[in-house]
Amino acid sequence: MGVRNAPPHAGSMLESLRGLGYAPTTALADLIDNSIAANSSTVSICLEWGGAESWVRIIDDGDGMDDAALEAGMRLGASDPRVERAASDLGRFGLGLKTASFSQARRLTVASRQNGGPIVCLRWDLDLIGQESGAEWPLFEGPAPGSEYLLSPLNQMEHGTVVLWEKLDRIVTDGFVATDMIELVDRIDSHLAMIFHRLLEGQKPELRLLLNDRPVKPWDPYLTGHPSKAYESPEYRLLHTAGVNVQCHVLPHRDMLKTAEQEIAAGSMGWTQQEGFYVYRNKRLLLAGGWLGIGDGGRPWPRDEAHRLARIRLDIPNSADAEWKINVLKSAASPPVRLRPQLHRLASETRDIAKRVFAHRGHIAPVTGRRISGVAETWQVRRSAQGAFYRIARDHDLVASVLSRAGSLKPDILALLRLIEETVPVQRIWLDTAEDKEIPRTGFSGAPDNEVMETLSSMFEALVKFRGLSPDEACERLGRTPPFDRYLDLISALEVKNTQ
Image (cartoon, rainbow, N blue to C red):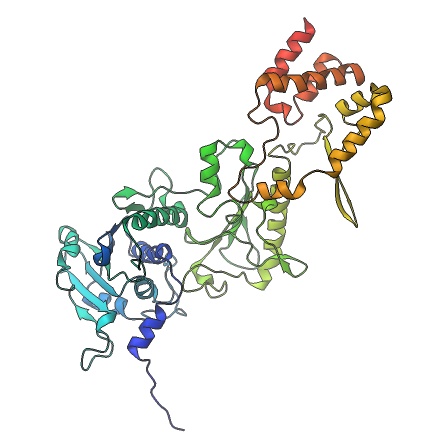
């Protein structure tokens, strides 16, 4: 049997690798992974605008590399993804440095120093592929002429690495101007704050990231410690696997958050896009949001408004990369079939809580052994084969009180209630609650106290005169009823007024 050697053509291969799908944000995150793997405590990223001469530089204070290690690291496929790695390793394919860099720039230069030793430097330049005789894959020594000064920070460092991108043809495209570079820096900041937030958190963070000399502040998807947070589960360890942990979170309803907190909690992608599983490996976020193809009846759950508050932290070890189908971009994951029932159960419980919090605008009765008595809900939902119907509760205290005193007007009032029920602008409300739009104001949001007091007084009279409650009992019930439970000072004033 004949055997032929069929190596890839260098130019075609490298140009093809540029199309893997990296964005500048994900490409830089890949390079930071390498810095973390090299035991860096500080990584500094700089994007310098200069038109066609713009450049990007990443400096870390990691262990650095000697000449042999640098040459190995600059080779494509430098490591075998099947080989067992250190538990802290964030890489897998041995492609990240090269493919991430080539996806944005045509020239990649890496300089490094190890333990006060000599500085070593190697460079790829895609424009020079095929122009060097006897070297189909030419790896040049030293920086490009004129770029030496960009590597000078390494001269003052005992150890570390500098990665330099030049010829940014995938970033500085036609029409790209200085303001676009500023916007790109902002997107990078948001992305890195999310991807590495667990390494950036705390009084003594494991990692310090600088972007154009400004610290990157961590973005916490779970609003840890917020007093209005609806649900935070214990940490579960999944059965039939090793090192896979899950913690379920339901965020506060937006009504429970200040305006600034709402913007922070929504994240860079918005509320609905940020819902779902957050998959981490060694505290590094791989996948932010989505339901990993899990669903009911063979149909995956979509990301939707009703479950926008559900976020589930999922930690996997790097030994599970192949089993979870982690891709080169570290942007996709698929749980093993044997683990899906456990994930489905945990996610279903979390989604149910999130839906209740969303529907009740954050007012969920605590789970206790006794019934919390409040005024009945104004709206009732009835479901049938024809769909859901929304009806005003005729036995609501205020409604029932009005109807009992309506006399000859009762038929007209009932007709008015039915008209309101049949003309609720459901589609309009749904559109107005779509992503990045204001939720319609309810619950007396923004209303002056005198308007709230008008309705509160009518409710109080209905409870006392129609239901026969004492003033104390009426006030206690109102204090347990949304949205009046937000106006306890008005209820107290009402109680004082009616007991004098």
